[in-house]
Length: 405
Image (cartoon, rainbow, N blue to C red; front, side, top):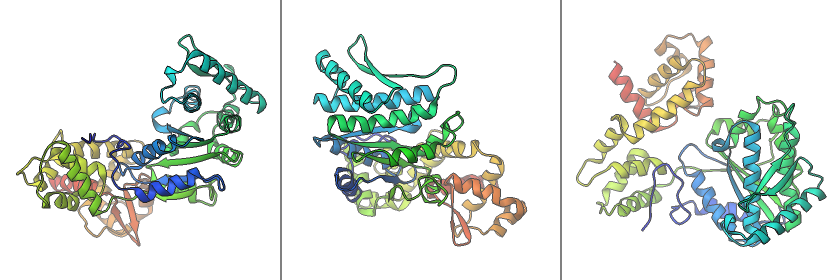
Protein backbone atom coordinates (compact mmCIF):
# COMPACT_ATOMS: atom_id res chain seq x y z
CA UNK A 1 0.00 0.00 0.00
CA UNK A 2 1.27 3.47 -0.83
CA UNK A 3 2.39 5.61 2.07
CA UNK A 4 1.96 9.35 1.77
CA UNK A 5 3.43 12.00 4.01
CA UNK A 6 2.29 15.59 3.71
CA UNK A 7 5.13 18.04 3.07
CA UNK A 8 7.73 15.36 2.26
CA UNK A 9 8.94 14.36 -1.19
CA UNK A 10 7.12 11.39 -2.65
CA UNK A 11 9.12 8.18 -2.71
CA UNK A 12 10.16 7.07 -6.21
CA UNK A 13 7.41 4.43 -6.23
CA UNK A 14 4.65 6.88 -5.23
CA UNK A 15 5.33 9.68 -7.70
CA UNK A 16 2.23 10.52 -9.75
CA UNK A 17 2.46 12.22 -13.14
CA UNK A 18 5.68 14.04 -14.19
CA UNK A 19 6.54 11.40 -16.82
CA UNK A 20 7.43 14.01 -19.45
CA UNK A 21 9.67 15.98 -17.10
CA UNK A 22 11.41 12.82 -15.88
CA UNK A 23 11.93 11.47 -19.38
CA UNK A 24 13.44 14.78 -20.49
CA UNK A 25 15.76 14.96 -17.48
CA UNK A 26 16.77 11.32 -17.77
CA UNK A 27 17.62 11.62 -21.46
CA UNK A 28 19.71 14.74 -20.89
CA UNK A 29 21.58 13.36 -17.88
CA UNK A 30 22.40 10.05 -19.57
CA UNK A 31 23.73 11.80 -22.65
CA UNK A 32 27.45 11.54 -23.31
CA UNK A 33 27.41 13.42 -26.61
CA UNK A 34 26.06 16.65 -25.10
CA UNK A 35 26.88 17.64 -21.52
CA UNK A 36 23.66 19.31 -20.36
CA UNK A 37 23.11 21.60 -17.39
CA UNK A 38 19.49 22.02 -16.35
CA UNK A 39 17.54 24.31 -14.02
CA UNK A 40 14.36 22.77 -12.57
CA UNK A 41 12.14 25.64 -11.46
CA UNK A 42 8.79 25.67 -9.72
CA UNK A 43 7.01 27.25 -6.78
CA UNK A 44 6.94 25.81 -3.28
CA UNK A 45 5.39 22.38 -2.74
CA UNK A 46 4.80 21.86 -6.44
CA UNK A 47 6.73 18.57 -6.48
CA UNK A 48 10.24 19.52 -7.67
CA UNK A 49 12.07 17.54 -5.00
CA UNK A 50 9.88 14.49 -5.62
CA UNK A 51 10.89 14.62 -9.30
CA UNK A 52 14.57 14.99 -8.42
CA UNK A 53 14.46 12.12 -5.90
CA UNK A 54 12.86 9.92 -8.57
CA UNK A 55 15.50 11.00 -11.07
CA UNK A 56 18.24 10.15 -8.57
CA UNK A 57 16.70 6.70 -8.09
CA UNK A 58 16.63 6.07 -11.85
CA UNK A 59 20.19 7.30 -12.38
CA UNK A 60 21.52 5.13 -9.54
CA UNK A 61 20.53 2.11 -11.63
CA UNK A 62 22.85 3.24 -14.44
CA UNK A 63 26.23 1.53 -14.29
CA UNK A 64 28.44 4.48 -15.12
CA UNK A 65 26.46 7.38 -13.61
CA UNK A 66 26.74 8.73 -10.05
CA UNK A 67 23.86 11.02 -9.03
CA UNK A 68 24.47 13.37 -6.11
CA UNK A 69 21.57 15.10 -4.38
CA UNK A 70 22.48 18.02 -2.11
CA UNK A 71 19.97 20.37 -0.49
CA UNK A 72 21.74 23.74 -0.29
CA UNK A 73 19.14 25.25 2.02
CA UNK A 74 19.12 22.43 4.57
CA UNK A 75 22.91 22.25 4.67
CA UNK A 76 23.50 26.00 4.71
CA UNK A 77 25.71 27.17 7.56
CA UNK A 78 29.14 28.79 7.82
CA UNK A 79 31.52 27.83 4.97
CA UNK A 80 33.70 25.29 6.81
CA UNK A 81 30.78 23.06 7.73
CA UNK A 82 28.95 23.66 4.45
CA UNK A 83 31.89 22.70 2.22
CA UNK A 84 32.70 19.68 4.38
CA UNK A 85 29.10 18.46 4.10
CA UNK A 86 29.13 18.91 0.33
CA UNK A 87 32.44 17.13 -0.04
CA UNK A 88 31.26 14.25 2.17
CA UNK A 89 28.16 13.86 0.00
CA UNK A 90 30.42 13.60 -3.05
CA UNK A 91 32.62 11.01 -1.33
CA UNK A 92 29.68 8.93 -0.11
CA UNK A 93 28.08 8.80 -3.54
CA UNK A 94 31.37 7.82 -5.19
CA UNK A 95 32.08 5.12 -2.62
CA UNK A 96 28.62 3.62 -2.93
CA UNK A 97 28.93 3.34 -6.69
CA UNK A 98 32.43 1.82 -6.63
CA UNK A 99 31.60 -0.64 -3.87
CA UNK A 100 28.34 -1.74 -5.49
CA UNK A 101 26.37 -1.13 -2.31
CA UNK A 102 23.72 1.41 -1.42
CA UNK A 103 25.05 1.83 2.13
CA UNK A 104 28.63 3.01 2.39
CA UNK A 105 28.90 2.03 6.05
CA UNK A 106 28.64 -1.66 5.15
CA UNK A 107 31.71 -1.59 2.89
CA UNK A 108 34.70 -3.61 4.10
CA UNK A 109 37.86 -1.94 5.35
CA UNK A 110 39.80 -3.44 2.43
CA UNK A 111 37.49 -1.85 -0.13
CA UNK A 112 37.61 1.42 1.80
CA UNK A 113 41.39 1.35 1.61
CA UNK A 114 41.28 0.82 -2.15
CA UNK A 115 38.75 3.63 -2.58
CA UNK A 116 40.82 5.97 -0.42
CA UNK A 117 43.86 5.21 -2.57
CA UNK A 118 41.87 6.07 -5.70
CA UNK A 119 40.64 9.30 -4.13
CA UNK A 120 44.14 10.42 -3.20
CA UNK A 121 45.54 9.47 -6.62
CA UNK A 122 42.78 11.49 -8.32
CA UNK A 123 43.50 14.54 -6.17
CA UNK A 124 47.24 14.26 -6.76
CA UNK A 125 46.87 13.94 -10.54
CA UNK A 126 44.68 17.03 -10.67
CA UNK A 127 46.81 18.98 -8.18
CA UNK A 128 43.96 19.40 -5.71
CA UNK A 129 46.03 20.22 -2.65
CA UNK A 130 43.47 21.71 -0.27
CA UNK A 131 41.30 18.58 -0.01
CA UNK A 132 42.26 15.11 1.08
CA UNK A 133 40.48 12.16 2.71
CA UNK A 134 40.97 9.84 5.65
CA UNK A 135 39.49 6.66 7.09
CA UNK A 136 37.95 7.00 10.54
CA UNK A 137 38.27 4.44 13.32
CA UNK A 138 34.80 3.22 12.34
CA UNK A 139 36.00 2.52 8.80
CA UNK A 140 34.29 5.44 7.03
CA UNK A 141 35.95 7.80 4.58
CA UNK A 142 35.56 11.48 5.38
CA UNK A 143 36.91 14.63 3.73
CA UNK A 144 39.87 16.44 5.17
CA UNK A 145 39.81 20.06 4.03
CA UNK A 146 42.71 22.40 4.66
CA UNK A 147 41.14 25.51 6.18
CA UNK A 148 43.73 28.12 7.12
CA UNK A 149 42.55 29.22 10.57
CA UNK A 150 44.01 32.72 10.24
CA UNK A 151 42.43 33.58 6.91
CA UNK A 152 40.64 30.73 5.14
CA UNK A 153 40.86 30.89 1.35
CA UNK A 154 37.19 30.14 0.69
CA UNK A 155 37.55 30.86 -3.04
CA UNK A 156 40.11 28.08 -3.41
CA UNK A 157 38.09 25.71 -1.22
CA UNK A 158 34.97 26.35 -3.33
CA UNK A 159 36.85 25.52 -6.54
CA UNK A 160 38.56 22.51 -4.99
CA UNK A 161 35.34 20.89 -3.79
CA UNK A 162 33.85 21.06 -7.27
CA UNK A 163 37.13 20.11 -8.97
CA UNK A 164 37.01 16.77 -7.16
CA UNK A 165 34.01 15.88 -9.34
CA UNK A 166 36.06 16.19 -12.52
CA UNK A 167 39.00 14.37 -10.93
CA UNK A 168 36.90 11.45 -9.73
CA UNK A 169 34.92 11.19 -12.98
CA UNK A 170 38.17 10.74 -14.89
CA UNK A 171 39.71 8.41 -12.31
CA UNK A 172 36.65 6.14 -12.11
CA UNK A 173 35.47 6.58 -15.72
CA UNK A 174 32.03 7.65 -14.51
CA UNK A 175 29.67 10.56 -15.03
CA UNK A 176 28.51 12.69 -12.11
CA UNK A 177 25.06 14.28 -12.09
CA UNK A 178 25.04 16.88 -9.31
CA UNK A 179 21.62 18.03 -8.11
CA UNK A 180 21.78 21.25 -6.09
CA UNK A 181 18.33 21.82 -4.62
CA UNK A 182 17.30 25.30 -3.39
CA UNK A 183 20.27 26.61 -5.34
CA UNK A 184 19.40 30.27 -4.76
CA UNK A 185 20.47 29.85 -1.12
CA UNK A 186 24.09 30.03 -2.25
CA UNK A 187 23.54 33.78 -1.80
CA UNK A 188 23.80 33.21 1.96
CA UNK A 189 27.52 32.56 1.50
CA UNK A 190 28.20 35.91 -0.16
CA UNK A 191 28.82 37.61 3.19
CA UNK A 192 32.06 35.66 3.60
CA UNK A 193 35.33 36.90 2.16
CA UNK A 194 36.19 35.12 -1.06
CA UNK A 195 32.57 34.16 -1.76
CA UNK A 196 31.05 37.56 -2.49
CA UNK A 197 30.86 36.75 -6.21
CA UNK A 198 29.68 33.19 -5.70
CA UNK A 199 27.74 32.95 -8.95
CA UNK A 200 30.84 34.04 -10.86
CA UNK A 201 32.71 31.28 -9.04
CA UNK A 202 30.03 28.77 -9.97
CA UNK A 203 30.14 29.85 -13.61
CA UNK A 204 33.84 28.99 -13.66
CA UNK A 205 32.99 25.60 -12.13
CA UNK A 206 30.40 24.96 -14.86
CA UNK A 207 32.77 26.01 -17.62
CA UNK A 208 35.66 23.86 -16.34
CA UNK A 209 33.69 20.79 -15.21
CA UNK A 210 34.90 18.49 -17.99
CA UNK A 211 32.87 16.16 -20.18
CA UNK A 212 31.45 13.92 -17.44
CA UNK A 213 29.92 16.30 -14.90
CA UNK A 214 26.41 17.71 -15.32
CA UNK A 215 24.61 20.05 -12.95
CA UNK A 216 20.93 20.27 -12.13
CA UNK A 217 20.02 23.30 -10.08
CA UNK A 218 16.58 23.71 -8.58
CA UNK A 219 14.72 26.12 -6.40
CA UNK A 220 11.36 27.45 -5.29
CA UNK A 221 12.30 31.14 -5.35
CA UNK A 222 11.15 31.47 -8.92
CA UNK A 223 11.54 35.24 -9.31
CA UNK A 224 15.05 35.12 -7.84
CA UNK A 225 16.14 32.13 -9.95
CA UNK A 226 14.83 33.72 -13.11
CA UNK A 227 16.95 36.78 -12.35
CA UNK A 228 20.00 34.57 -11.81
CA UNK A 229 19.44 32.65 -15.04
CA UNK A 230 17.80 35.13 -17.41
CA UNK A 231 19.46 38.47 -16.72
CA UNK A 232 22.06 39.36 -19.31
CA UNK A 233 24.20 40.70 -16.46
CA UNK A 234 24.10 37.41 -14.55
CA UNK A 235 27.21 35.18 -14.66
CA UNK A 236 24.99 32.13 -15.29
CA UNK A 237 23.07 33.63 -18.21
CA UNK A 238 22.71 31.01 -21.02
CA UNK A 239 24.46 28.30 -18.99
CA UNK A 240 21.35 26.34 -17.98
CA UNK A 241 18.36 24.99 -19.86
CA UNK A 242 15.18 25.57 -17.85
CA UNK A 243 12.49 23.01 -17.11
CA UNK A 244 9.43 24.56 -15.49
CA UNK A 245 7.37 22.43 -13.10
CA UNK A 246 3.70 23.37 -13.16
CA UNK A 247 0.74 22.16 -11.13
CA UNK A 248 -0.64 18.74 -12.01
CA UNK A 249 -3.57 18.63 -14.42
CA UNK A 250 -7.06 17.62 -13.36
CA UNK A 251 -6.64 13.93 -14.21
CA UNK A 252 -3.53 13.41 -12.10
CA UNK A 253 -4.77 15.66 -9.30
CA UNK A 254 -7.84 13.46 -8.96
CA UNK A 255 -5.63 10.38 -9.04
CA UNK A 256 -3.42 11.71 -6.24
CA UNK A 257 -6.37 12.71 -4.06
CA UNK A 258 -8.04 9.34 -4.58
CA UNK A 259 -4.87 7.36 -3.86
CA UNK A 260 -4.26 9.33 -0.69
CA UNK A 261 -7.73 8.46 0.59
CA UNK A 262 -7.31 4.83 -0.49
CA UNK A 263 -4.12 4.66 1.57
CA UNK A 264 -6.30 5.71 4.53
CA UNK A 265 -8.81 2.99 3.53
CA UNK A 266 -11.48 5.56 2.72
CA UNK A 267 -13.79 4.98 -0.22
CA UNK A 268 -14.61 8.20 -1.98
CA UNK A 269 -17.53 9.31 -4.11
CA UNK A 270 -16.58 10.26 -7.64
CA UNK A 271 -17.34 13.97 -7.29
CA UNK A 272 -15.24 14.54 -4.15
CA UNK A 273 -11.78 14.43 -5.83
CA UNK A 274 -13.06 16.72 -8.57
CA UNK A 275 -14.35 19.21 -5.99
CA UNK A 276 -10.98 19.03 -4.24
CA UNK A 277 -9.25 19.99 -7.48
CA UNK A 278 -11.67 22.88 -7.98
CA UNK A 279 -10.85 24.16 -4.49
CA UNK A 280 -7.05 23.90 -4.36
CA UNK A 281 -5.91 23.21 -7.92
CA UNK A 282 -3.15 20.79 -8.87
CA UNK A 283 -0.65 21.53 -6.11
CA UNK A 284 0.26 18.11 -4.57
CA UNK A 285 0.76 19.51 -1.07
CA UNK A 286 -2.60 21.25 -0.99
CA UNK A 287 -4.39 18.19 -2.34
CA UNK A 288 -2.85 15.92 0.29
CA UNK A 289 -3.57 18.38 3.08
CA UNK A 290 -7.22 18.46 2.03
CA UNK A 291 -7.38 14.67 1.67
CA UNK A 292 -5.85 14.21 5.12
CA UNK A 293 -8.44 16.44 6.77
CA UNK A 294 -11.55 15.34 4.88
CA UNK A 295 -13.91 12.84 6.49
CA UNK A 296 -16.66 10.91 4.67
CA UNK A 297 -20.03 12.66 4.58
CA UNK A 298 -18.45 16.00 5.48
CA UNK A 299 -18.76 18.88 3.02
CA UNK A 300 -15.34 19.27 1.41
CA UNK A 301 -15.70 23.06 1.15
CA UNK A 302 -16.23 23.15 4.90
CA UNK A 303 -13.12 21.01 5.37
CA UNK A 304 -11.12 23.42 3.22
CA UNK A 305 -12.35 26.39 5.23
CA UNK A 306 -11.47 24.62 8.49
CA UNK A 307 -7.84 23.82 7.57
CA UNK A 308 -7.42 27.36 6.26
CA UNK A 309 -8.79 29.12 9.36
CA UNK A 310 -8.63 26.91 12.46
CA UNK A 311 -5.59 27.41 14.76
CA UNK A 312 -4.28 23.90 14.01
CA UNK A 313 -5.30 23.86 10.36
CA UNK A 314 -2.54 22.56 8.08
CA UNK A 315 -3.06 25.19 5.39
CA UNK A 316 -3.37 28.01 7.92
CA UNK A 317 -0.07 26.99 9.50
CA UNK A 318 1.54 26.75 6.07
CA UNK A 319 0.35 30.18 4.92
CA UNK A 320 1.38 31.69 8.28
CA UNK A 321 4.85 30.22 7.73
CA UNK A 322 5.06 31.54 4.17
CA UNK A 323 4.03 35.05 5.15
CA UNK A 324 6.31 35.06 8.19
CA UNK A 325 9.30 33.91 6.17
CA UNK A 326 8.71 36.12 3.15
CA UNK A 327 7.67 39.29 4.95
CA UNK A 328 9.88 38.93 8.01
CA UNK A 329 13.14 39.43 6.15
CA UNK A 330 12.30 42.58 4.22
CA UNK A 331 11.62 46.18 5.10
CA UNK A 332 8.06 47.37 5.22
CA UNK A 333 6.51 44.17 6.57
CA UNK A 334 3.38 45.85 7.96
CA UNK A 335 2.66 47.77 4.76
CA UNK A 336 3.31 44.66 2.68
CA UNK A 337 0.65 42.76 4.60
CA UNK A 338 -1.76 45.67 4.05
CA UNK A 339 -1.09 45.57 0.32
CA UNK A 340 -1.69 41.82 0.23
CA UNK A 341 -5.03 42.16 2.04
CA UNK A 342 -6.11 44.82 -0.45
CA UNK A 343 -5.19 42.54 -3.36
CA UNK A 344 -6.94 39.58 -1.72
CA UNK A 345 -10.38 41.15 -1.86
CA UNK A 346 -10.03 42.02 -5.53
CA UNK A 347 -10.73 39.17 -7.96
CA UNK A 348 -9.34 41.03 -10.97
CA UNK A 349 -6.27 42.46 -9.24
CA UNK A 350 -5.35 46.11 -8.75
CA UNK A 351 -3.32 48.64 -10.67
CA UNK A 352 -0.61 50.81 -9.09
CA UNK A 353 -3.00 53.72 -8.64
CA UNK A 354 -5.72 51.50 -7.16
CA UNK A 355 -3.28 49.99 -4.65
CA UNK A 356 -2.02 53.46 -3.75
CA UNK A 357 -5.58 54.64 -3.12
CA UNK A 358 -6.55 51.49 -1.18
CA UNK A 359 -3.69 51.64 1.33
CA UNK A 360 -2.99 55.38 1.42
CA UNK A 361 0.61 55.22 0.21
CA UNK A 362 1.86 57.60 -2.53
CA UNK A 363 2.63 55.91 -5.84
CA UNK A 364 6.19 57.27 -5.67
CA UNK A 365 6.87 55.05 -2.65
CA UNK A 366 4.85 52.07 -3.78
CA UNK A 367 7.37 50.54 -6.22
CA UNK A 368 9.74 49.61 -3.37
CA UNK A 369 7.07 47.55 -1.64
CA UNK A 370 5.75 45.96 -4.81
CA UNK A 371 9.27 44.92 -5.80
CA UNK A 372 9.72 43.15 -2.45
CA UNK A 373 6.44 41.28 -2.90
CA UNK A 374 7.40 40.19 -6.41
CA UNK A 375 10.84 39.04 -5.30
CA UNK A 376 9.14 36.89 -2.66
CA UNK A 377 6.85 35.32 -5.29
CA UNK A 378 3.81 36.47 -3.33
CA UNK A 379 2.37 38.55 -6.16
CA UNK A 380 2.52 38.54 -9.94
CA UNK A 381 1.90 41.22 -12.52
CA UNK A 382 -0.48 40.48 -15.38
CA UNK A 383 -0.30 43.34 -17.84
CA UNK A 384 -0.75 46.39 -15.59
CA UNK A 385 -2.56 44.71 -12.70
CA UNK A 386 -1.17 42.90 -9.67
CA UNK A 387 -2.60 39.74 -8.16
CA UNK A 388 -1.68 37.40 -5.34
CA UNK A 389 -0.02 34.51 -7.15
CA UNK A 390 -1.19 31.63 -4.94
CA UNK A 391 -4.96 31.18 -4.61
CA UNK A 392 -4.63 29.51 -1.20
CA UNK A 393 -2.72 32.52 0.13
CA UNK A 394 -5.31 34.79 -1.47
CA UNK A 395 -8.22 32.91 0.14
CA UNK A 396 -6.51 33.06 3.52
CA UNK A 397 -5.86 36.80 3.29
CA UNK A 398 -9.35 37.48 1.97
CA UNK A 399 -10.85 35.82 5.04
CA UNK A 400 -8.45 37.76 7.27
CA UNK A 401 -9.24 41.06 5.54
CA UNK A 402 -13.00 40.58 5.94
CA UNK A 403 -12.59 39.75 9.62
CA UNK A 404 -10.74 43.05 10.11
CA UNK A 405 -13.44 45.15 8.43
